[in-house]
Length: 150
Ligand code: ATP
Image 1 (cartoon, rainbow, N blue to C red):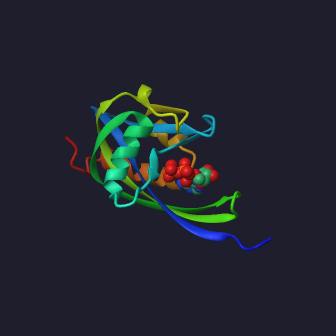
Image 2 (cartoon, rainbow, N blue to C red):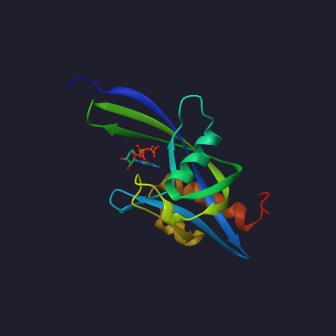
Image 3 (cartoon, protein in one colour):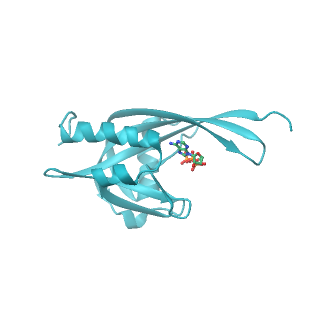
């Protein structure tokens, strides 16, 4: 078999939260027939900033509008695309976003569902280790009021 073609891909997404006294909720989406829970994200279009992509993708995938508070970090992983024998090296930027409006019932067809979870529940629910790391970081910031949240 010929060697795989290497491609790179950049996506951007958000940890969107709403706060009610000491309770912090985070929106997650499910994919792969509802088996995998993850943070909303999507491909950065040509000429688009990672911030703009994060706001757009969170809105499309979850039905929720949010404003960016700060960058949380980025994750990297490899995955293989059988059709075309492609190895893809992916980078995903993630932003902490405060909920401004919208309803998870308006999530789009690209995901199986979108739901709010208490942040500790979200930490248990999320499937990818790297995303758990980002949620831990967000949790710390939100519960210790380390960021400029109204
Ligand atoms: P996007 O949401 O950026 O448009 P996509 O839905 O096309 O992307 P990914 O979510 O990157 O694709 O999934 C491609 C492959 O990578 C899948 O097999 C998925 O299980 C795996 N994957 C997704 N996120 C992670 C992660 N954080 N760590 C490891 N593997 C991941």
